[in-house]
Length: 499
Ligand code: AMP
Ligand code: ZN
Image (cartoon, rainbow, N blue to C red):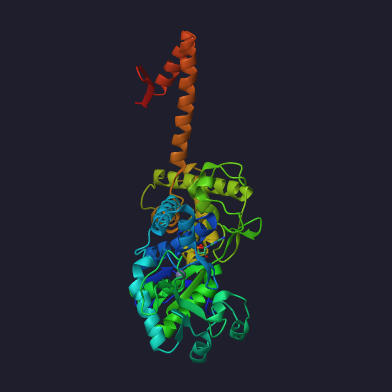
């Protein structure tokens, strides 16, 4: 019997039993990256978190439509509708088309996601690919009397909206009266009836690069609008799950709710999930603070924070050790420990298929049998308890201990009953590989090491030959031969094969 999945809903600030609107289907939306620069490890944490949610829902048998967008227009430098478009600015500085920036960093993002073994979403829509839908949404909000036009820009009327929908601010824990009374000395505020109002369409200034025709002006959509329009298009006016990093709660997600309610009359999301931040020496990792580490810097070891390179799977394991709603501090010591833990888990994964059970006998050690069954149940209980991956890893280590003991003959082969043995054989790899998404990259690391050692040995042999030191060169060749490594000297140098 699998335990019921519960999810901490940011909206209610409670764990709730997950009941999809139309089982077995689940609609899930996650805010994707703004593709104006390389994703850093903080961004990756959030995408790995929702990869785990996606993977577990799939494992439980749900048919998930997972939409994760690409923000390629409308995200301005400031959340308060101020400053240049992040992508437009980068394009201006590099003197390239904005879409070249978008393509470059979208490619980079996908490559990094693949390195971390993050599954691709079912749909990856872009904001610029959904201008029609966004313009239609603005029109509906205007028709419903919840937005107003000023000088070609359209603003969402928060003061009016809260009279109809009292929950504005609830998701992010903001007090609406404070928002309405806030005074900020920003250019666009002159056009707004109220400082809490936000742009859903913006008229483009003459130098603005990314612009489209609309009934109000040649301009571009507000940042929050794309997620409202694309989630409605692909998942319907109401859908099950919406995720993102917790720094998106306000204004992005709060305003997404307002737009959906303002357009369609219903709150769009049943369960709001927010991942906590990756920090470094206690500070949020972010591009603007200059403390961000890029994945390739970590994989190559070329960064000032780490003593050695770490593999993508070690980093993924490191992230799984902490619950997604807690902050996670990035440090060399923590990664070193994670590397050890990851290797231990992979070792158990490699040993498991080598174990043999003698046949259909009752368990010779009923306590061991019960312990394995309990740990297998705990995997489901813990993952179903708001995706507690830290506890899932503890359960997997408990099972790894049993696998090692069976392999080393500390436990007899028939210690477990056949049913329990078979359950261990199926549940352990399913959780490690399918649910946690931990692929075994230790073989690749070993290959790299043996390639490096072979090249060293062949260099020493070449030097011996150059000095006409035939005994050393023959010794190397013969010893390699006895290891089935055949060395061939040709015109283009020396090659080796394992036979
Ligand atoms: P952006 O490209 O800035 O829109 O961010 C993409 C995602 O990364 C969002 O869901 C952010 O909440 C998330 N994010 C940004 N910084 C961090 C961080 N330090 N830790 C975890 N998630 C982050
Ligand atoms: Zn979004």
